Amino acid sequence: MRDLSTGKEDTVRFEEEAYALGMSVGYEFDTTVFRLSYSSPTTPNQVFDVDLATGARTLLKTQEVPSGHDPAQYETHRIFAKAADGAEVPVTLLYKKGTKLDGSNPALLYGYGAYGMSMPASFSVSVLSLVDRGFVYAIAHIRGGMDKGYAWYKNGRREFKTNTFSDFIAAGEALISGGYTQKGKIVAQGGSAGGMLMGAIANLRPDLWAGVIAQVAFVDVLNTMLDDTLPLTPPEWPEWGNPITSAEDYARIAAYAPYEAVSAQDYPPIFALAGLTDPRVTYWEPAKWVAKLRATATGDAPLYLKTNMGAGHGGASGRFDRLKETAQCYAFAIKSAGLDG
Image 1 (cartoon, rainbow, N blue to C red):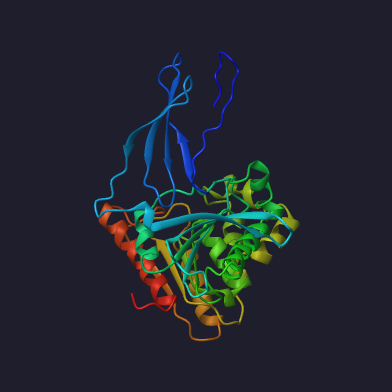
Image 2 (image 1 turned 90 degrees about the horizontal axis):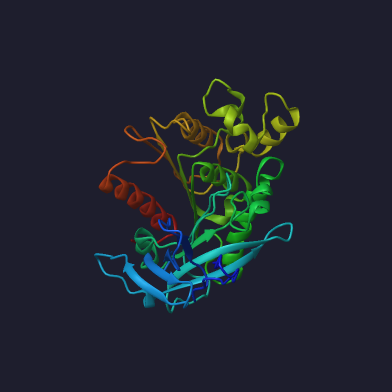
């Protein structure tokens, strides 16, 4: 924060290792007070007023959790995974206080890594249902997002897209080496462009995952980028490349596109979700991906497809239907990780 009258600058800091911080819109220019929102994986959303003149911080509101929540029962940490090229990939962790880091815990690792979207280390009531069952919940802040600035985004798009996949794999391996979980007990989750990530990491390292949750998954990247009649295809070329005009872009996308890269190998259990009226990721992308997996994969891992006949890109609409969809994903995670419930 900066005092424009004096030029003095200060940084707003909180004690937790990872958290999400945002500033509210100011309606008055001539004021010494600004409002911010704070949350972390352990701490529900809080609203503060901060006085620039005195440095005083006033808590105005804390999100209520109707079922009750004690932040002291949980731990939030930030670790860094070493990527294949030496980059330090931030990983946010949430788990129950007192959890033994002996590798015995199941883990859910979430990732996105596209369009410069940063993944906030914020509070989620739903995630607690997994953590209370013994899961370590992790967010991989991989390249393709802007979690470490614009260069972090540039190094995870177009010709550098595979960094996104190797970063996520490195995050999974860091969870293992840190004793948070073990190979075969990590459930990977991502949606949309993060669903493409799920398809890629399932192809690259199927042995690492207990299960893969791919929501409205953009897994047919090459064919979609080749179809310029789709209204969203031309605006996407700056992100992925244009395989219509560039042979180099074609070869690069074809090499990593999840649908094209399906091979005869043992895949982990996969839960793919689609929305019939999805305008961003057409429903046939997850459908044809799962069909190819079923025709090609060796082993007998379940390969599920759920098409929501009344949903678009955002998943099930309505408060309770959305919760049911989350519950289905978490039930899959619990089953895949070998827990009873």
